[in-house]
Amino acid sequence: MTTIDKATIKRLPTGVPGLDEVLGGGLPELSFNIIAGPPGCGKTTLSHQMMFALATPERPALYFTVLGEPPLKMLRYQQQFEFFDAGKVNDSVHFVNLSEETATGDLKTVLARIVAEVERYSPALVFVDSFRSVVLAQDSPKSFISLQEFVQQLGMMMTSWQATTFLIGEYFTDNDPNPVFTVADGLVWLRQSTQGNSVVRKMEIMKMRGQPTLSGLHTFRIDGKGIRVFAPPVMADAEAGAMVRPDGRRLRMGVPGLDDMMGGGLPRGYSLLVAGPTGAGKSILASAFLAEGARNGESGVIAAFEQRPNRSRGPFMAELIASGRVGVIDARAPGLSVDEIATLLIAEVRRLNASRVVIDSLSGFELALAPTFRDTFRESLSRMVVALATTGATVLMTSELEDRYDDLRFSPYGTAFLTDAIIVQRYIEVDSRLLRIMAVAKVRDSAHSNELRLFSIDEKGIRIGEMLPDYEGLLGGRPTQRVAAPRSP
Amino acid sequence: MTPLRSIPADDSDPQGVADGAVAVWAAIDGALSPVIGARGNAALYKRSLHLARVQHPWLAAAYEGAVQPGDYSALRAALAQQTAANASQAHEALLRIFNDLLADLIGRSLTRRLLQAAWSPNSYGNAVQDDSP
Image (tube, rainbow over all chains, first blue to last red; front, top):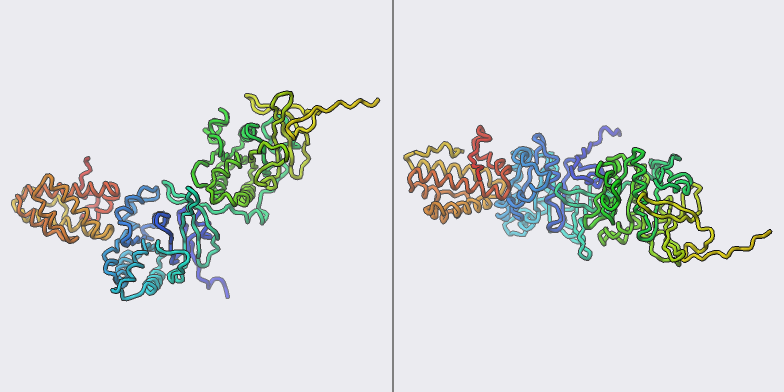
């Protein structure tokens, strides 16, 4: 059998950022789909966004409104979104209200009207919103056909009329396997997950015939531009070897002396964890890293979860951000997921062709996450670091270190293993002063210094100083002066 | 499908004005009801009558008589009892109120878009509208 004889399924780009990836390459043309979920979860918005993206005068869309939300209200609210193009209404987008037909309680009447309108407009896209009312109508004793027959006939008719169809429904529940689902080619489920006071929108493609969809729940956000879906960052490339391999080139850290401690700088494509207690200078180190890149004509991206990225980082950073050489990921939205930050980071890295990425800090990142994602923070973070590596960018992450001196750990998440290099910072008490020390704990596949070096911070940034050879127990926080051993003659 | 402007304001025949007005309302009904539902359109029409009768109290009969969606016979009867000039003026006011009401709800641009179908296919862009505040 030759492949030429196979039917080709064209995949339509939905116009919803991230949705095509989650669907496994776009929306299969002529498919019969159900968009389900509780009220307010974004079903109508999703439908409108796809409709306005896909409809053209040659491929018009028909949007049937059935009882439920009054069409006037729907139009009033939907036009607030950027995708709503009033110029397309009555041209490539046609709204048809079916409330009179539904009120008869006979699904056959509803179907007949749908047929009549489909014949009139020959649409390439058909939406029926909301399907709940249709379902309610089936309970009426006046109905001459059952819901299942209605859906089957509708599905058959739409496919032969070459229309991609969406039934939008809100009554469906997870544990009620509705017969309608069997007929559908695609089943998109929208939810709002609540934990504490945090509500997160999630989307699941429960079914999409003939497509390798991305399984699982994917977070999405609705703003003035409409829906944006955050597909998990792609890791397959990394496993297939497409990851940008470190090429031996090293990036300068922007702190005098630190490059030498690291064996000549941070190898390109590496991820570096800077761990230290609060106020030790992690963010300053991160800013120095980005500033050094900018001095070499490289651009960077920063996701800052603690400080205001363009204020507290000094005038030079503020200027880099203002001039667009450092992109900023807005991490202030409530209910964040790691996938969302990963998507935004990777998109920004690609947009700026950035070679340096800073995440400051992992502790703030975890706090910014919706509670529902905190349990899986480690796993998602690991996925994100790998995905960032596929862009070829070098990543610096900071991590708050608890002021505990009885055990030496680099991050509370066990994230240390994810990173290729680690710099640790500490406070020590010497002569009634709080001093800072820094050490390079790890640089994968590279020689590096094992020195514990004093450092200070002044208006020019971090200055690395000497070792304290006469002291021991530095990592315990309270070093003691070594008793000078009598020199052997 | 007769646009308002084709109704001569100085027509000495109030019945003619009433017929012309009802034709306009039927055209609006034809354009809007498929989109927002016959009941949605009827509700807007009735609200417009309610607002217009402040200036034209005799429209009360039309208001009371607007029961069935798409039935403009009460309006026709009320207009026909007035002088042609009066009827014309009230009809214009009613149209303006209706247009503003719809524009408040769904914006001017979409209102224009939807009502375009109410006017003759050859008069795109010439729909009866009053965009003044």
